[in-house]
Amino acid sequence: MYRARVIPCLLIRGNGLVKTRKFKDPVYIGDPVNAMRIFSEKEVDEIVVLDITASREGREPNYELIEEMAGEAFMPMAYGGGIRTLDQVRRLIRCGIEKVVINTAATESTAVLRAAAAEFGNQAVVGAVDVRKPLIGRYRVLSKSATVETKLDVHEHIRNLVRSGAGEILLNSVDRDGMMNGYDLELIRIVTRMVNVPVVACGGAGTLEHLSQGIRDGGASAVAAGSMFVFHGKHRAVLLSYLKPSELRDYFS
Image (cartoon, rainbow, N blue to C red; front, side):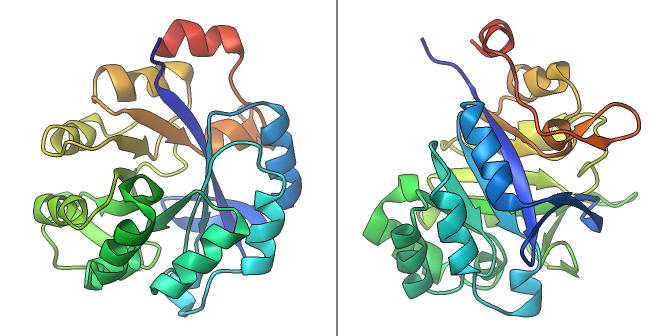
């Protein structure tokens, strides 16, 4: 029986695992390799790892760290951050990555996304989009870890990612990131209705019900969360966790 995927989304900064709120104020969580080991033991569906400073700093992925993390990942692992060339994609695949997540580079040109899909298949390429909604006006596409506001139209940009070969869309709400108050269901519905590839909702999950809403009410094919799986309790104590098999069965089957 089909079950929607529930995906921890981990953020790395330098050699450390961090968590942000609205893409700001990163809080150190711990060692990313150890975190990967823990999530592997918890048998998560798959995992997404995003380097939040690589594109902003104009540097390549940290291949040594990525390879070490992939060595502990007994589940599909996706990586994003600093990917600008096909050679980088090839190197990441050799490190053990199953999916590359392309965001900032694709706001400038979809060439690397198109080339990666041609060589490795659409299923290996995720088009990521960071979106913010101002108090007045339409949704905006941001890049470089939400430090740059582009002039791209959200609808046309996402359609272009899919036309260029993205086999999946990682849709991240900047306003909801780390807030644990629920997904932007309106945004998810807009995107899921206009593309024919899986959409992974990210940004805002804090409860099982939020995850379920992303799929049931938003129409997402999968749901991702960060804070929910790294913090515990109202004081946000660090505790890496995942859902019980019974919770996965009851909420997502």
